[in-house]
Length: 184
Image 1: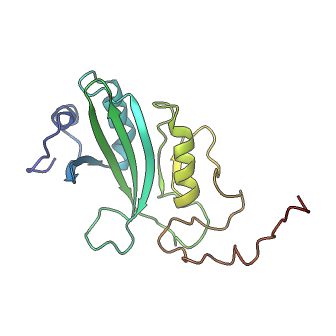
Image 2: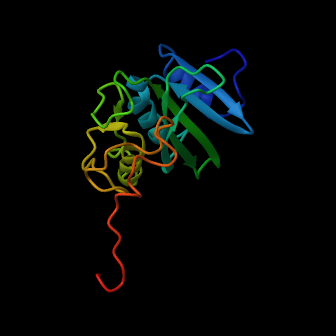
Image 3: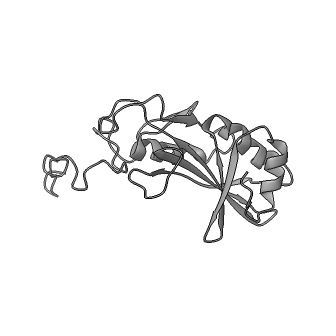
């Protein structure tokens, strides 16, 4: 963890339990984020859920972020963020991991570098949230029980929340067959 560790009751417990891991903590506008390596994410998230001193039983959200052309330096282009809540301790924690693509991100092919472990075995509610991150960013979740598109059709040719995706799309609106009330 960094020397200027944010004041959060969970951070010392994680630092003690995972002293051999590379961890960072940041705070922005009162929200504390624990930044960790992708290969450590599942194990540390399990600890945060199961440890009585942490007790993060509620997975609020799983989301992604694209840091392409971000003004500050980041450890990777894409981030997966888990938002956790402990109702027992009335605390909230963001857990973030960064990953870098190994292929051109303009395409649809599966990039083996854009993959993290699924947390569906820890929180059942993660299933749809992970599918949404996959659908919008192309980040795959290892061991997900049903990883397929959830918002777009199966053969959609891109991942629209990537920052290199054109704002006006790639012709989807112009080539989309319009169905009016009489045809339905």
